[in-house]
Length: 243
Image (cartoon, rainbow, N blue to C red; front, side, top):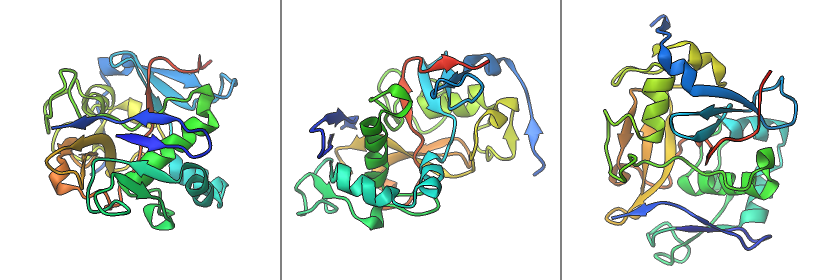
């Protein structure tokens, strides 16, 4: 699947496949390293996961934060990105064309958005060169071997973060069970996050990850027009180490 950025004609690849808080600080903390993306080493905008070789945005609801600072953000994204290409399905314009044209309905002020809105947001970050980078994306819903695995697969991106980095336990909301690393990030909730992983048998949906228990949910259960969150990541080590 590709995303068409109107102003730059860049095509970006997306994976397509057939109670009180409990703190349990452990060795997983060493896997996260603070990174600054604005040349000020005292302000963390990201965390580098050494186990995954992956950089996570520090803000788990970055879209809402940016929208609060810039009320015109949705209009700007729609004007600049225009459309998102995906596996042909009924949400396309025209139907089954493989192209979905963005509208205001793809975005919400609380930071949730359709899958199309989430893809457009990471494309917007790339167009703006967020943190000096142009290859931000949504997380993959696959294990390191390329397989689907709903839970107990700690080498996938979100489950590595949930279990090894944040100290979560499968079946327990992250707001209830986590370690000290939880406080490194802002705006983490028990919400659901989009992945970039589509599935040929269910082209109308995409895989998602729930922080209300650390479990992936398949594309067949998650229509692309549902409203979930987006957490931008990029491969590799990004920015400068915080001081």
